[in-house]
Amino acid sequence: MSVSNPVPQRFSVRAAELDDADPLSSYRDLFVDAPSVVSYLDGNSLGRPTKAGAERVARFVAESWGGRLIRGWDEEWFDLPLTVGDDLGRVVLGAAAGQTAVGDSTSVLLYKLARGAVALRQGRDEIVLDTDNFPTDRYVLEAVASELGMTLRWIESDPRSGVHADEVAAVVGDRTALVVLSHVAYRSGYLADAASITRIAHGAGALMLWDLCHSAGSVPIELDEWGVDLAVGCTYKYLNGGPGSPAFAYVRAGLLEEFVQPIWGWMGREDCFEMAPGYRPAKGIRRILSGTPAVLGMIAMRDTVELIDRAGIRAIRAKSVLLTEFALELVAESLVPLGVTVASPVDPSLRGGHVTIDHPHFRAVTPALWERGVIPDFRAPEGLRLGLSPLSTSFAEVVVGVEAIRAELAAGS
Ligand SMILES: *Cc1c(COP(=O)(O)O)cnc(C)c1O
Image 1: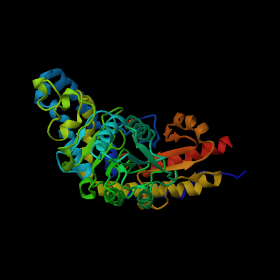
Image 2: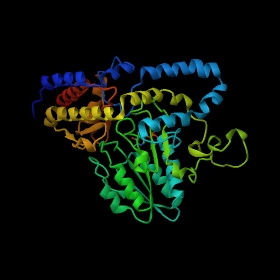
Image 3: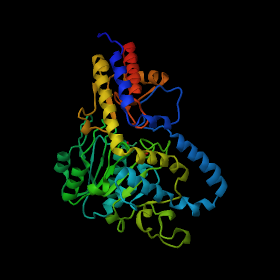
Image 4: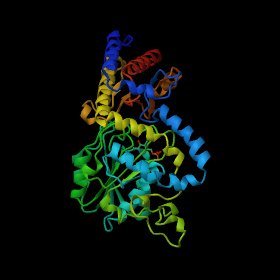
């Protein structure tokens, strides 16, 4: 058995230097304090609340909901899914106005977009996806395929890496209706080449749908420039919308007029307050909506969108790369000697905002880590994800977290 020593002092010194030099360090004070947490490494799963978001929610309850009551719908709420969608589009997604709406969950929006997409490719009977995509993506596409008698073409992706452009090129063809992939892999953090893969899908005549859950707010996204057809993503991860805050959907302007989603609710109908017979999709991206939108859930994310706008996604990405590089150095120094292996790409240009490490004891030590206020998340079978949300995470926090993981592993072995 190898002897394990605490993380060397020089890493704490480096962390202090990196925090001092960090142009975004002051943003950490804009988040709500969690006194029992010493290292939050799960901002990729549930982002921390911003103080401004907490105040905005309280103000909303007191003034908008409490004060305006039903009048709030006419004054603001009815258009909020599109207003917030446009902000997200401009600041986070590289999307011009009128193509993004907020509502439902990612799972539900995935179904709506995938089902609407394959209807635009009648005569094609295959959907391309990969074996390591997030479970909901796989299940939803299984449902669409079984509903319509389509075939799923699975790319056997490497769980420590992700889907490469040549793997997509090898499976698409004139039967492909739709390609659905994650921009940043939820497990490994692999950052897919979205522009190239979108081109490959289009070259085969297929539509491209990106799941942006783990990239929105952490890596630059240029949906319009890449020519992406459809995208979904959640807002409670790097966008700090809060538990269960609604997802977003993007439909390229050129597709919108013919695009019809399968949940024909009144809120997505043209002139919905006419209560008229028969469903006719509303003009534009409003047609993505079905029922009454989750207004309260859209409040808090607005402040994060403002922060991202102010900080700039390039600066956020630059800090993200430094954070994951630093984490991997610490892992190499203090955890690899204990048998830990790295399950994320080592090249930062192929990696999003989190890193995953594997060890057979990670399931067993996770409760003790949480008890100490060190909060990564465990991903079966033996992965620990270190999610380093750039606006709210310090370099010092990474040292504290890795040292706690080392101590728990060393104690357990
Ligand atoms: C987090 C995540 C989801 C979550 O879907 P919900 O409907 O919000 O539960 C979906 N896809 C990916 C890739 C994710 O990372």
